[in-house]
Image (tube, rainbow, N blue to C red; front, side, top):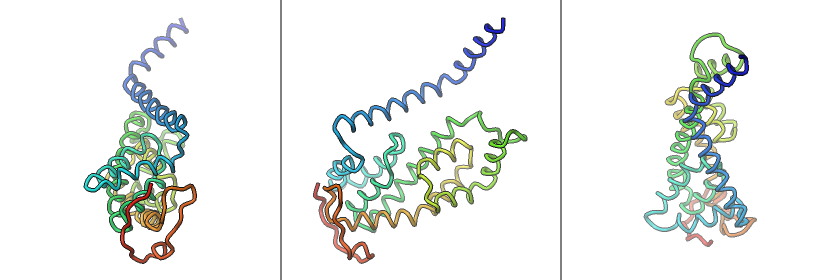
Length: 223
């Protein structure tokens, strides 16, 4: 009798969360496919970015391709830092910052709502609950400050976005804190990327003038 009850409860839980399980399976498959592709072609994240640069410097479509790739990047866990460096190299310090701010906020929104979807029904909005529930509730009550601090101390970018959604932090305070708190890091990484003379080696050669913050003319990518 007890075993029958457990089996019925297990089946009920699977039916209740069938959509989430299917979505999680698809997400895991997406990550695995990308990792297998990179491994089979012996590509590091840096080498993938080198290949992408050919498309980023393709005139009118370059910025759009960059923004789209940056937006979906969290879904395959591709490092934001490397793509930001590529953006700085491809578009220069000014346009690179503008495009990356737009792209990073879109990517944060995607990661936030993915986390929000999987966290639905797990954390209650009210009630005492356990320590984790209490901590999640405190974070929701101070959404802007919580996210701003996490951005300013450079916690893993995508992890913060997924966690914020999972813990049901309010979206508008989240995205505002993300937009403001990410500016220092974005400017730094784009400036560093814009100072790279050649992106086609494991150890990039830097332009010390641009690295110091001076303007320079944008050069074509060599990949």
